[in-house]
Length: 164
Image 1 (cartoon, rainbow, N blue to C red):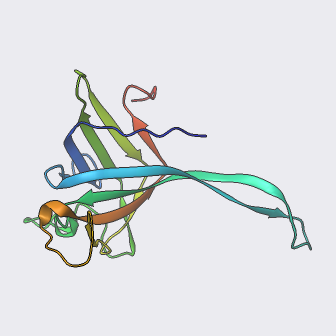
Image 2 (image 1 turned 30 degrees about the horizontal axis):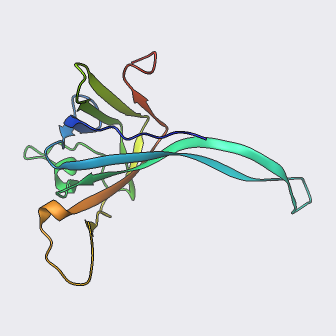
Image 3 (image 1 turned 120 degrees about the horizontal axis):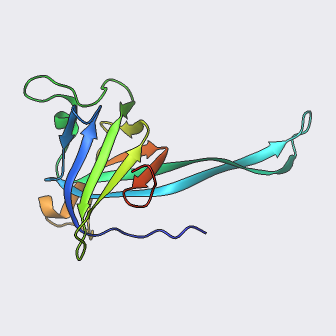
């Protein structure tokens, strides 16, 4: 069983886009990024037989969510000069660059998380979510956020993986 941990600290940068040179930093509106490792399994059947013969492990991938206190769609799809940071127009948009730099308390080194391979996001489905809840109430920007789900091949953490 995998053990997942929470990384806490100050997010210095959270860059999204098509490349390192064509990306936008959303750290000023970022609430959190969460992810989980998913392992798909499915029944293995024999020819001319509908009964499952066994189970095999499928491919692993990452499913996660970017949560921001402001809508980031407009910033990601076009800036003032008309530059696009994502590939718009599809239900799932390709984002080839997704890097988070975190300054952890008590550590002199920053931690860099690279969410690897093209990240598929579902643009245009962000929804306001309330923390707390209850019937009726007043919500300000501090108590709501917009959700942007994504999928990726894996996540690399600097200092842990040999190639970083």
